[in-house]
Length: 187
Ligand SMILES: N[C@@H](CCC(=O)N[C@@H](CS)C(=O)NCC(=O)O)C(=O)O
Image (cartoon, rainbow, N blue to C red; front, top):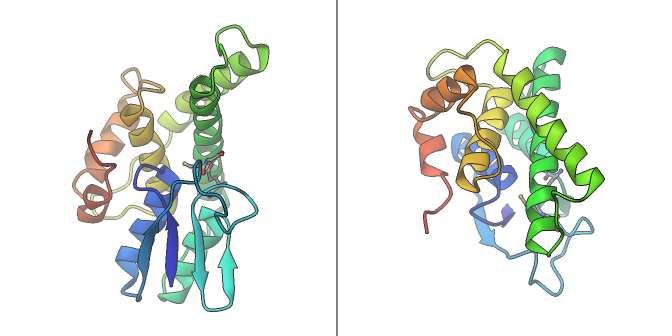
């Protein structure tokens, strides 16, 4: 199967983590979604995955597919699923602001952009209140929060300095070889 995406995307990173842990046969096809003329996905976003006749257009369906195809479990607990969703909302808001700013919008002067900023701060506080996983036992909610927190630091979009549990989560994830191997390239 082929995973299409970039090495800087946190959503792609989570898919790569699941694929690396799966033992399945797969390859990464690097794609710049902003310059590609015909990217092959109606979302105009990465990641997307192709496995024979199957196309999946969102990291959530991809991670679930890969986990289940390799005999593992995706998130079964509804509270953990909600934590995973919160991390997605955090990422969506932060990536939106990042792309708007890149395209010339003054995000400090825009009312909706300020709401997105507020959303980011509130979600960081909420995610920080969750219990930490044991070393080597990260589930997909932990991975999603960890890739989101790491991306925020990588792109300087938000700080986790006031959030001790999120810092600790990144330390725990930093001991996970696949999390380390999928870190965004420096420079
Ligand atoms: N819900 C999607 C979000 C994917 C997403 O936002 N990807 C970003 C890259 S990190 C993207 O391709 N953005 C391009 C754009 O919004 O134009 C998922 O989970 O896969």
